Length: 271
Image (tube, rainbow, N blue to C red; front, side):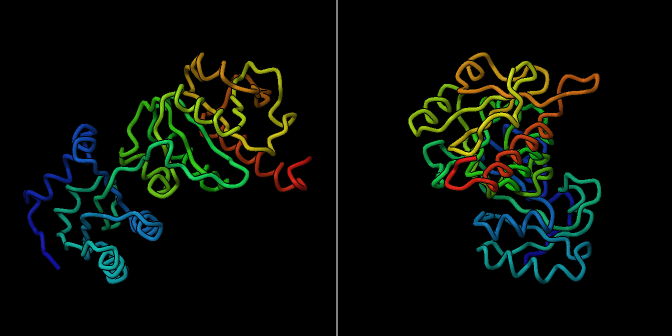
């Protein structure tokens, strides 16, 4: 196992650049995964790291298992000192595991669909934590894929990986413009349901059992006129307090799990 002791090592500096600079990540086509659980889930679901760094003094008893997992992934871990790892880490309390590998995201035509497609479409979501939470919830609801339209933050942002618990690396995520997304959905006969506080229909009053894509937008602006107008149906979540809407990740969770609820109570797709 290679041993990196100095915090001024060139490889340490490179990791720091990738952590801090989205342009560097895009140029290199790389992202960073940090954390034992996130790393293990990503690798077990097919993500192939190109570099793995392990602070054995931080990992403790988990070090041997992580090292074996890195070996099986084809990228043996390099051992780093605590000082070097803390410089590389984006976290306040790192757990000693960090890896570099391909950026998430694929072309929309590479999405695989189930017999009854179920997708989440996001548009203009700015905060990395919100985008990560959306991906984690989408995974929990069992979506086929997430289509990210006009992202205001890059998928390789460390906070996206952190908030998604690594989900961003194994749930199918495609980047597309709103026009591309709408055309792709229409060609496949997938109904687009858009969320808006101003919609007439409550989300519980709409049949969500067929092939469906749910679209949510940024909290301040909502969905663009183009994407909203393309919706086959608009739904709202009832708000009984003073605020007129929920956080975007909370809204998506409510809507996604309504699909799960309705489908669990169906026979052959009929309520």
